[in-house]
Image 1: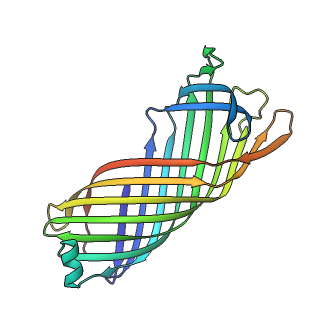
Image 2: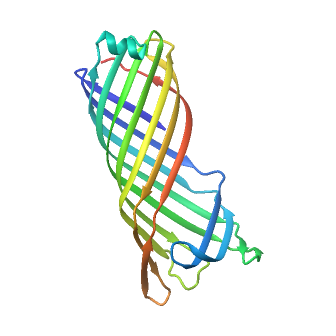
Image 3: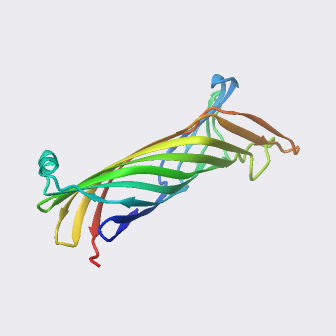
Length: 245
């Protein structure tokens, strides 16, 4: 993951980040239900979720306020303090694989040939703020973003002969939302170089949407997509270089 910003005239902030990840290990549960709201489970498989990848891209624009009051600096125990409101747009793609099938309900055990996929996208505008400060050689920041997201996904359930391939079903939900919290601390090795430790928490979910299934006989059916949830937590160690212009 890389993040950077450019500050024009000491006030206008152009902010952006890009990240890529490979999934090296994971677990998946796939369940089918005979009743609404995930009731009367009649089939469950617990499978390997390794493979797949993820991409995150975000850009924003903000205005930086320098807080110079001694009362505020004393309260935060810093020498310098900045507050930056931000608005932006983000895109997140998650390509997930399901392999090494193991049927739990009914208890049939391992089965061969499973190689299903689920590709999801979250995208939309966001608004937030960042509070950053400096104390001697130490720097720190806290950041919050609220996202309004559209959600789309496409799946290929490769062992279902009654489904079409490569698109077995799709998911759509317009009223998605996400909250992103970032807390970062660093130490200035030189005036330009610093090392940073960052904690990142994300909580995303959608309201009701549409689950559209495509059958091998050419027909399709729709049912309610109850919700989608995505939670993540990351600890990152990095380095920062500041260009003086």
